[in-house]
Length: 301
Image 1 (cartoon, rainbow, N blue to C red):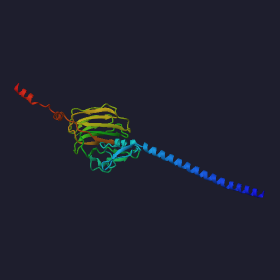
Image 2 (image 1 turned 120 degrees about the vertical axis):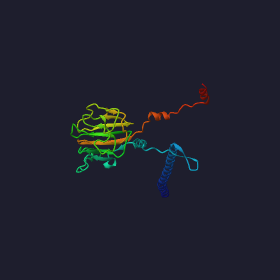
Image 3 (image 1 turned 90 degrees about the vertical axis):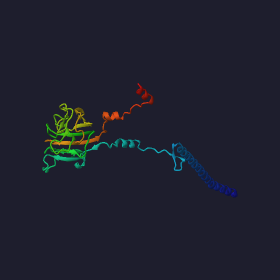
């Protein structure tokens, strides 16, 4: 009886030890199998994704065609914006150094206590503004001559309702008031009128409509287009003076100091391609070919 009890007790101990070990072994085996299955699934997904990437052929140095993944554009509009901003034709005539594009002539060169022309910063602290004291009389002219061009600028008189200044185009380098040129009037009541000055001539003078300008201490816009001696002027987006047949039709561009404090800003210019005249157009037109038979017939008739 005691022997049977002892054998049963040993059997129970073995069961208590062996069965947990078997359970642990089974769990480890199942976990390993699950891990392998997951890894195989992930690898299959990666392979499928790689096959889905489009490829573009590239030519190697040895002439063999290779394939490479098509690059993804991070900012498609960036290059387009750079091309749109690349405008090298327009020249800003106002810079920190006035002498970069301008030279001064004064009717009283000995007066040098205060500069007649000076560059300041605008209200935003960034934009350049050209201030003219108005006295003594004179002008500020570009260092380069211009013939065919488009020019824009803004101007205002801070406090003078009868403020007077002007833009001289085709200006000849004459040390006098006023040099040979075509004058575009910026006189507050007559802004936009065009007429010859000095020894210049044109087919006509042109009076602009009155009241094209804005109130004092308000910026006005002026646009000037020059084509082969023809001048067209706009003031604040409205058509102003227009003349043709100007002589000379090339020269410097000048701003007048004419007794009033005046401010200028955003003075920009771009050259235009010269127009062909009628003679050049005719010479460039090919003549019709003449055949031998037609020539003979013409001579025999």
